[in-house]
Length: 133
Image 1 (spheres, one colour):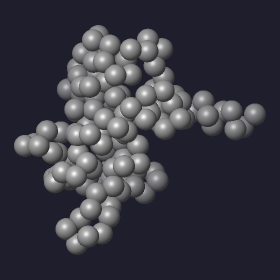
Image 2 (cartoon, one colour; image 1 turned 180 degrees about the vertical axis):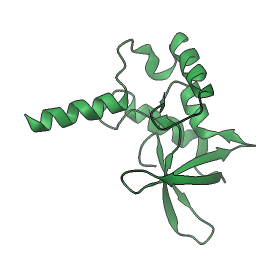
Image 3 (cartoon, rainbow, N blue to C red; image 1 turned 120 degrees about the horizontal axis):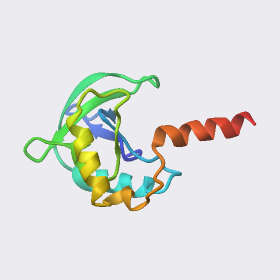
Image 4 (tube, rainbow, N blue to C red; image 1 turned 90 degrees about the horizontal axis):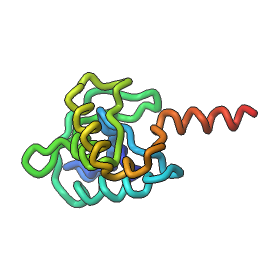
C-alpha cells in the first residue's frame, strides 16, 4: 500500500504489481487525511483476493486499474463514498461518482469534515510553485 489511491498487489505468479486506482484521487501522504485514506483503502482490500482491470498507464507509467473486491464492490467508489478521496473528474467519465462525492461532502464524511479540504491536484500544484521560488 503506497497511499490511498495506489496499491501493490500480489499476482498469481507471486510477482508484485503497483496499481493506480482509476476514477479517484486521494490526499497525498503529506496532506491532511493522507494517512487516513491509506489506512481506509488498506482496510478494504488488504489480504483479500481482488479482481482488477488494467485500463491504461498514467504519466508516471503506473498501471491504472479498476479494482473490485467482496462480491464486485468497486474500490474507487467505496473510497469516494466514505469521504477519503475525490472523484478524479480530470481523468474519469464516471459521473455517478460525483454524486457519491457530493453525498460524502454533505454528510461531512472523512476528509469532508474540513470545510477547506484541498484537492490532491491543487496540493501538488502548490508544492511545485513553492519549489520554483
